[in-house]
Amino acid sequence: MSHNKHVLDGINKDLTEYNREWYLKQTEGWQDPYGVPKVVQHEGFNVVRDDLIVGSKARFGDYLISQVKEDTIVYVQPRKGLAGVSILDAAKRYGKKVVLFMPSSKVISDHQAVCIERGAVPKFRRIAAMPNLNKMAKEYAEETGGFFVPLGLYHPLVVAGVVRVAENLTQKYGEPEEVWCAISTGVLSRGLQIGWPNAKFYSVAVARNLKYGELGRSDVVSDPLPFLRNEKKKWWPPFNTVYNYDAKVWKYMKFKGKPGAWMWNVGGEPPLLDESIYDNTDSQRDWGEIRDV
Image 1 (spheres, helix red, strand yellow):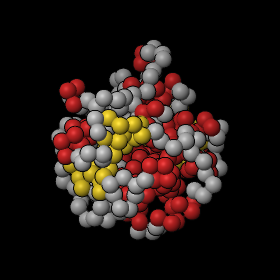
Image 2 (tube, rainbow, N blue to C red; image 1 turned 45 degrees about the vertical axis):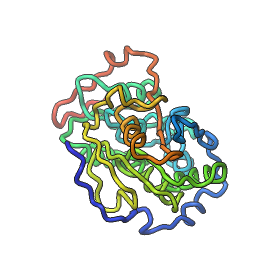
Image 3 (tube, helix red, strand yellow; image 1 turned 135 degrees about the vertical axis):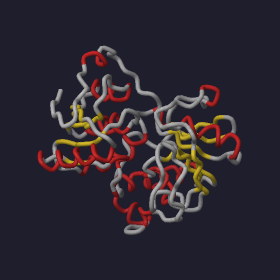
Image 4 (cartoon, rainbow, N blue to C red; image 1 turned 90 degrees about the horizontal axis):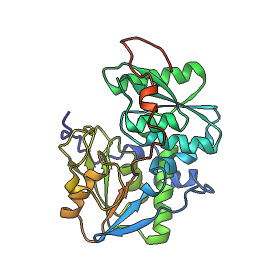
């Protein structure tokens, strides 16, 4: 599916109800368990290297999960994405169980396999589109007393985490003039826009069309590759990354970015220790079939 028909309204929907001061107030006293993100220079650009931890969502989601009273976190894990493994990392710190709804398939993906290896309880459902699976996961959480987290970890306290981390970086490095990142749901880009109100933003759309309020004040570049397809190897950046996601930003920043511009690298490919998980996980379902592993 192409992703080049975006709503360009200049609206940051995360500023319609709350402001920058509100987000910062929420995280007063919160200590980022990973410390201030490491910023490394590569070919004249400053890269936030969250591939050196589990992934940015583990960092941003920590404060939210620390506030959850329920014993179980429920989320939707697509075939690609580091949200599931990031939630697992944060949940482990607070003694939470993680249930991940995953689209049915003959064989699970690499990212799904890592989630299962690290303790997620998978629930496979055959679906026509991801919003349907999101609805199923939310209903399951309501029925079982779990805490449902929407796709992209879209929650005000996660946005607050992004804003606080941006402020921590400002205290150490100063506010960047120009920022590049990949965009899907837009939680990262919009949160950084709030945290760095004077920076110029460029977001590379890699997965879907951006809707009302999702793009904020960022310019957008639409990458033509399908979401699940990796970037061509000749354009891979010189650091660990997710090749169907952040890797697609590098080529645009190299040719259009100002010297010294920042890129946010949300993570790298997580290692899988036991490859027998692929064969031992029964992930195929028929329509309407509810049969959990």
